[in-house]
Image (tube, rainbow over all chains, first blue to last red; front, side, top):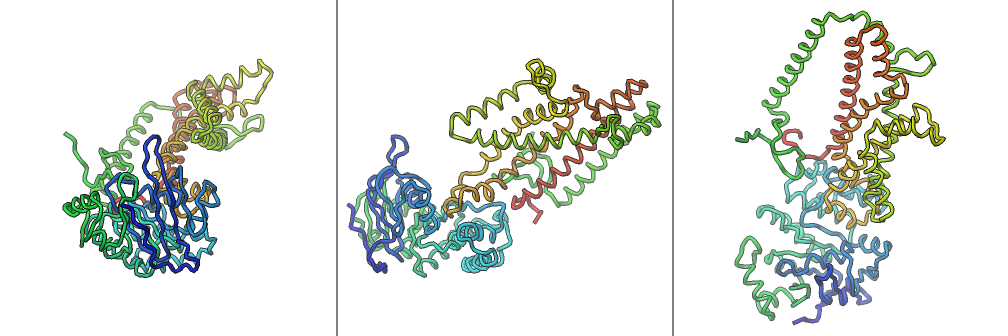
Length: 266
Length: 288
């Protein structure tokens, strides 16, 4: 069942959602990976997307900032529709920060240089200002003393925290997290989740794909469950976990909670 | 039966093969390893010296001709000669080969069939024919159809086009080896295309390109002796002329070989510095 999206905390005076996805479909050759997806996210809203692997969660996320092209439907971010045009792509990417499963830090740059690159070249910020900004965000992810280090000298959890700081340095309106802890050892998962929870507490609008159900329950305003490229169910964490209305969701939850390596209902 | 040296890793970031025999840099084992390598070199060098000494060569003739071989004196026609000419030919060819290779590599990475076709056709043609044949076609055969090029020009064109074809493949593979996630992360940050190419992809590709490119340039230094075919008085040509004049073949050819070797080592040292410069951030245990 597809529920009406919950727009409970919109502070946009026009009542317009910060992000709107309508009738989004995508194919890889003959294979349809996204089926008529409809999603609206309001300012300050925190959405967690979950679902089995291959359900299209990451693909949906990657469509939102144009890393993947879509073939049908509309994506509108803060009033800018994501068409094929380079100008629209740039405008949308300036407003959306993204954190990847495999960090994707630039290995030849220090943590600080990773963070200052985009503010200098995209925001045209003077380098000293960019460094001040980067240091303040590195402090926020509790890595002040690691600013001069290269990614290869940091642990996985530290690298992911630098990646979060790097995205935040562009002061985005929306943050996308694509399985941010899936590549991490269990002991490093919590330090990254804590940072994301802290960020959620500041009112940052975010969409997070994750298998961490404990985190989802604590951080999310809304949980979106996807299967076979479509949104199958969505609702508040209480609705979704305690009273799942969809059979596929029930199956998914029982599977994921049985495997501690896959998901934890903290 | 494989013996694994301690500290040898095989992570994605570590370009060393698993069977690399070098121990961890900075360790005691490493210091001992390096010291023994130096001792081995010293011994082999001394051995070489003893052998040549035993041949009772005419070293005064070497001393007499060395300034000419090195190119410290100008040729009778006022042009530079010897090792100096070798270096000039190599450095100029390096510059043009790099230019040709960059354009060709871009063509090889292009999705335009015409551009891609031209680039692959050129690379195949110049990699599939001997350098010597190319030199002769440009210098001896082109005049037959009315195109007369000087010896120096012909040599530069042949070396640049030949090595450009090889270097293009090296550059292309280096660019392709940068993980796709790097470009994605850069695009997600809204970075313009040229910043992604210049600040994100190029430095990482260069780290992979420099070692094979350095090997190509050392090889070019030696292949520059082919321009002697056209009567340019470079190192190899001079050595042979002096040798022929007084039948001092051993003296002159050994001296030429020693000069080539020293120049190659100088090239390799430059390459090593560049490798260090672009190796920033690459983890190697014990170096940070």
